[in-house]
Length: 268
Image 1 (cartoon, rainbow, N blue to C red):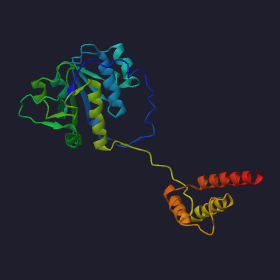
Image 2: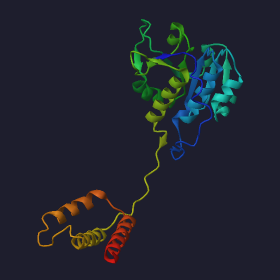
Image 3: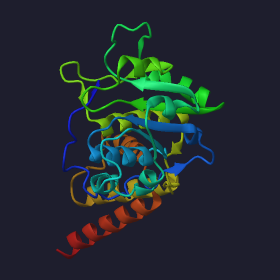
Image 4: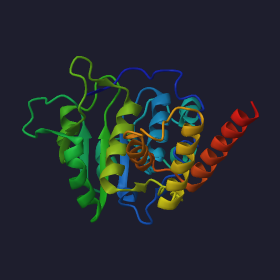
């Protein structure tokens, strides 16, 4: 994974933020202890897109280390509903200031740099970061779009993490990298839960049997079924009905359809 490259210009223009609105946040979230630290970000649009990525996953604390342009209208435009994250962002002169209150910091970069600290998959590091968040603040640190984090900046972090990516083209836009990191963290913390499926009013055995009998009667009337030689049709219809998991309303609908077909045939 390489975090870099200019922002892809058009995709994040004001999309419908209602996608996923049925998910619910857990009452207490470990994510409140996490901050995203962007070091020397050059394009203000990337700051806004990163803020949006954070908010969609439940993170709100953004720290900017010596950004080239901030505040900036492009950052606000690409935040697309996450302007509150930008307004609360803390701007500091160096990484040491950004990490001063952090108990644990993770630096993101694909390159091993020959450092003693091994590069680890973020998915495997995320649980450790969540454990650390129980006792203090945790920082997720991302470098400049072009050069990423320096060796000194990586050494200031407790862990060096990366994402699995296509080895032929591992380059990720900065905001995309922030999105993946926050998503993996939200998943590891079970921060959000999908809504429970609504209860289904499944048809009773009696309702299914009544429908089957009516269908058999219709098949006899139309000449499809010879009642003296039924073969295994009834058995197969029973198996089919069991697989369909029909609801009571669906059975009633099928009854109505069969009645209409039978009446139409008699009238003809």
